Image (cartoon, rainbow over all chains, first blue to last red; front, side, top):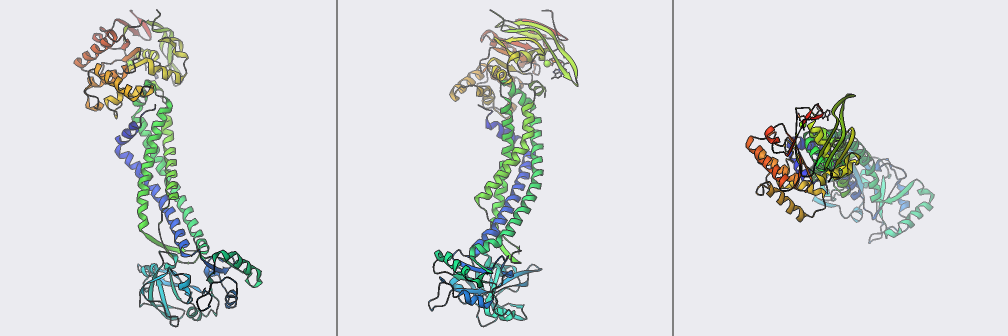
Length: 388
Length: 225
Ligand SMILES: Nc1ncnc2c1ncn2[C@@H]1O[C@H](COP(=O)(O)OP(=O)(O)OP(=O)(O)O)[C@@H](O)[C@H]1O
Ligand SMILES: [Mg+2]
């Protein structure tokens, strides 16, 4: 049997101040790491939930976002002739040709930022039934009216019901606020597609076309029909969800890389802190180490005791850091998404793989921080150790 | 019957900055089973060094060392650790109890290296603490005990595995007269009643009187047997 774990726990609680500082250091690193991962995951989660897996989105091939995608009016009409598109009761295809423009709005707390204004067709409620008007009413398609996403309403001045937004040489009145379970649509403003096209002098060229199929199992057939027609050569179809997921990739990867880089730099500090604390622990307990070795405990037992202590510090730090980070779930933040060049509001989101990543990271700091001191403790000569 | 401790032509030097410091010179000594040996001598004469060699926590530079029938100079480090745990009981000048463990847990510590069950360990710990007169202090931490009590817990820890040899390095060196006397009486009892072979280093001539034989070390040589 080895040296009992209660020895580790009690010894560890004996040096309160240095231990607490070390735990806090590791906790802080884990907190930062968790926060960054939660941020990247929040972006992904928000954008993935923006698109529906049951809608098809057609964009220009290899366009980074809707801003760089253009589909001419003739092509939109041509798309209507493809098979397997679902229709409304009166036989119209369920399809929304959507122009997307970026406008500049004033942030309530000061400064300006971009937001996307999406033109949608009358059928949008069939495509995105989950989008609900929570205040005011739907825009009138023959008027210069807009509805604002909840996140836009919250963040930007002039996105309240009754406010007038000036762009494309005209005033647009905000008449309603809508919600979509915190998705990226809440970071947009919607108006009538034809009104927007007219105001921006874009003729009939939209940014993307979203449509519904009669059955998602026919998606392959739909794609094949599209591929068979040379006039669709420059366009591609994917699920709306996949499209928005791709919109999150750049930002999420950027946050992860930058965050991991910062965390690794921080972790050097925390690991060195743990090493110093553990060296002090070994120095304080040299005679105890000599005594235990005299009694017959092996070098390995001594190594284990001090590694366990270092791991305990790391794990408590990780627990604290994660606990604190989990509170971030109640906060939402917004930043510019470079794929759409417009503001995106999202919440920090936690998942099991983030927790595991943080724990692995903490284990690593504990092992690395504890190893040198523990090895020194294990290597001590018994007689020297007993002399103190 | 051969001696339980046989030290034959043992030398020990320490090295400091590639300078050899000879401590014991070609020293020979035999201790019979059941003896209570008092080791005296001036500071720096090598008493602790000799005791450490006999107890198997240090190795001779030269010579033969047979303790309890084992040639301990030849044992590997892990074999030596195992040998110590079953043959030697240690008593230190400053008790060397683990401060974060209770008296009970301190005494139990060496038993964790044996295959005794929890119940067997409990019985042995209680017996050992009762022998040293601290059956009522089992859940006390070292800092809640007096120096004399701490040393008695340390003695309980030394005898709990029932080793054949006890080594004690100035066990009364840090104690007041009365506590020292109690410890000496206890050591005497362990020798007479429990038949432990004891090697005790001491500066105190009064303490040495308890021993059945006294040896003097002088600059690494045994004198005046
Ligand atoms: N680990 C060591 N490294 C170097 N020198 C040592 C070591 N241990 C002991 N010595 C030296 O060996 C000599 C004998 O030391 P030892 O501790 O055996 O003496 P001692 O008789 O026990 O003295 P004291 O009565 O003061 O305890 C001393 O000169 C000491 O400095
Ligand atoms: Mg000494």
